Image (cartoon, rainbow, N blue to C red; front, top):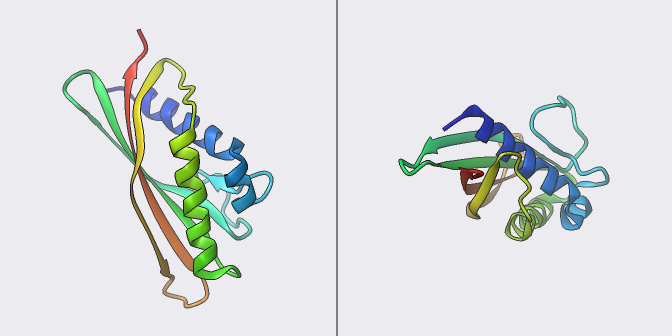
Length: 135
């Protein structure tokens, strides 16, 4: 496993999400999908919260990426719609990963809830990706 795989897979995911028409509809144009490059984004927005990577033992790398969605005015349905847009984008993404090949990518978890402040809504989606170094 190399850090290059993590960086390349995450960069490809971000580019794919930001270019997806459904994601742009859910998060605005340009899509407010971040890997923490902004501190005070407009609502709704999505942000990568975690990227775990583990070698599979066969030369592949298993990535689990968690993306949090934060909504305010649109409530729980806006958060659900945003998660649905991310799910559809991941399922339809043509992966272009520098130096690596994505063997598999799918959503393994999604949940929506009211945030503790009672004013915002939060969605969480977890994506499992298996990558291998390109030959």
